[in-house]
Image (cartoon, rainbow, N blue to C red; front, side, top):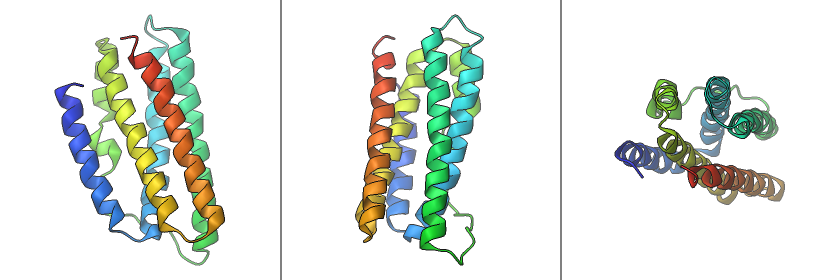
Length: 170
């Protein structure tokens, strides 16, 4: 994978370490926002990919991932409300993936037809998401929550696998 992706991976690893030292409440708050921003990223990729000579299947993939990210945010918000019914979500002072993986960078890569680099970055974000859900599954004692986080980790692995199939074509 390219140099850009090595830096991105390193920055993401730093965030994973910081998240593992935070309370579950704060990790959930951070990740709810992350899922929403992820949905926005995939939606923009979907819109832009329609303007290129890319396969319609790639646009469809981006749209499916957009919908999944929104569903994840809803699921996590429900979990947050169940666990912390009397607490408002507060912003977590941690760089978001949106800062590390600038949407503008992805859009420019897509516009310049550097598809393998786009997919490298997306693969990294899906890998990161899976790690966070696996961490959350290990961090909660409630069996229902454990299963929910394991399920979300499996979905992220599915996203990774779908993206990886396309990445192999570039």
